[in-house]
Length: 258
Image (cartoon, rainbow, N blue to C red; front, top):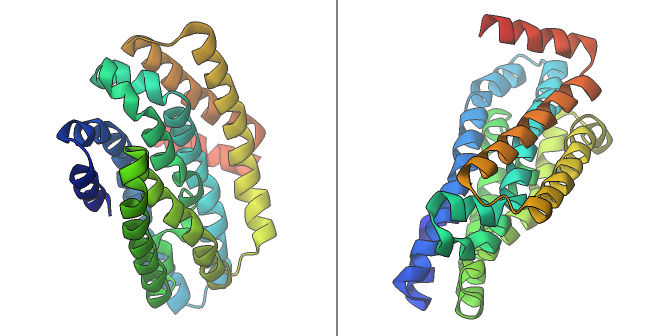
């Protein structure tokens, strides 16, 4: 899908436009690679739980896994969205700031797909490969149609919307498969994963936007400091406000071993 977006953009625009789109795509690929790294190991884990009839462990994998992966993804996505323009300009040059809106749109759907239970790894491991394939084939077809329809009039934002919209529309379909497969309920997912991640994400996004308006954040050092500081502050607050004592002990143990 991502390679096809470049082809469509090149067909309807100048080569310069394809170059401007490269910045958003490369930033997006950070999330794409991270999602793959977290998703693939769940295939044998979920498969083993299903084969052994360990429904409680499968449910906890879905809920606790989504809780932690969202806590990892949300601050990264929010930071990329809030600092899109200064990030592209400081990283690639002033003219690449034109891709800021495309970057914001392109990474936005990862706010949803940061949850572990809707990843391909979890769904394949829990035995729902066929349903997953049908949904993703539909998303790919919708991506093609929307990108062809929107790119001539919107330029850079066309393929970004063509990617984000199908994934957002596919999310409830994946969730409809994942919840029964895991044994979790929507209320449990909202309480244990969505509420902690998104409440702190909204706070972080507001603070980064205020910082950007007040200071400009126009140098690479300033962008790096604002981005890294915001992400680290998010994780610190998540640790203090949302983790229970057992989870904090687990984090401390992991840090000591690292």
